[in-house]
Amino acid sequence: MRRGLITSMSETLFTYDIEATDATTQARAGVFKTAHGNIPTPVFMPVGTKATVKGVWPQQLHDMGAKIILANTYHLSQRPGAALIKDLGGIHAFECWDGPILTDSGGFQVFSLADHMKLTDDGISFRAVDYDGAHVSWSPEKNMEIQEALGSDICMQLDVCTPYPCPREEVERAVELSSSWAARAWKAHTKANQALFGIVQGGMHLDLRQRSIEALEATGGFPGYGIGGFSVGEDHEIMFETLAPLCQNYMPREKPRYLMGVGNPRTLVRAIALGVDMFDCVLPTRTARMGTAFSSAGRINLKHACYERDTSILDEACDCPVCTGGFSKAYLHHLVKQKEMLVAEMLSVHNLTYLIHLMNDAREAILAGSYGTFLTAFEASDAAHDF
Image 1 (spheres, rainbow, N blue to C red):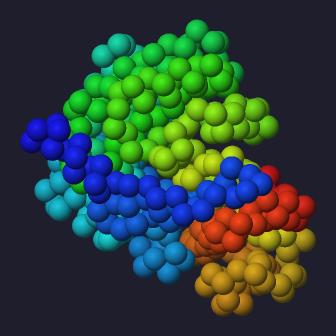
Image 2 (image 1 turned 90 degrees about the vertical axis):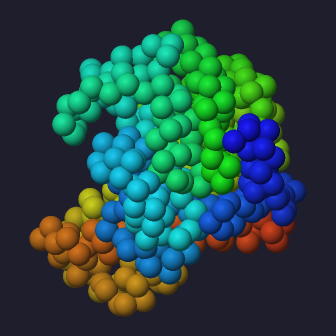
């Protein structure tokens, strides 16, 4: 299929309509259209790394109001393999989810295999030591081929993500490679009903972030942008020093902005005020498996003995099945101490419901023109104590 035809079809399908902007902040509410449904923003996207959100059924995700979920290209390319998923009807049919799906490139997972990974201008070579130890090489083109086979609605370019702290020259090199790979991914991408997002890199260096977004815009046609290289070891206050001017001065207004890998409630609420639209993180389900819950009273660590006789529910303001079902903190504490598998599922449902509802409340505040008030109230509340 000709590139011109693909671009035309993609531009028609993948549009981002901004419905409202807040007068006192940079927050905005919008709708991103995909082949499997519209995504209202701001939005939190549950992470289903291996084609499942851990401990949560697809129907439960629908019930809590999830509009889009994620899957991981690295893990699915290893098992069961992208070719098998394609043969079985694609990622939507495979995991029985009829809404939008985003696949990340898997680059972050590959770079975590630092002792078994080699970076070149052409791509990445690595050993899948957490699977069968096979030697694998990914170019941007090969990565696109895998994500097209998976059949997600949104796919992400292969990029280079640096840790924090990191020497400036390494971050600069990551920007150069990521920009080059974005152009190659754009040329290789052929799936008209799949949106390819570029990724802005540059660490904590605003000038490198600016260079990255300018290179992506020059490539042309990306319907949205991921903001990568944050939440990689830095304090969130340091992240905001760069994120704020990046969103306010350099990111295109008419395209969705996706802050990758950030998921604690206070950071989400603050980032929305800067104009971020999309978020994902394993935090709500990972902390659930550790016995921790989000709530309007702040983070609750159910391992603590203070909950042994606590008959209250997690959050009176929450309508998840755990809270409406009347399950007490004492009962959940007992399950955590006994390492019962049920509690990980219960807390995962609760935490995801909490974040999705928080995003819905933020969206309603933007539409009502009162996000500044919403932000101030949240920052002053116990819910902001989420670390």
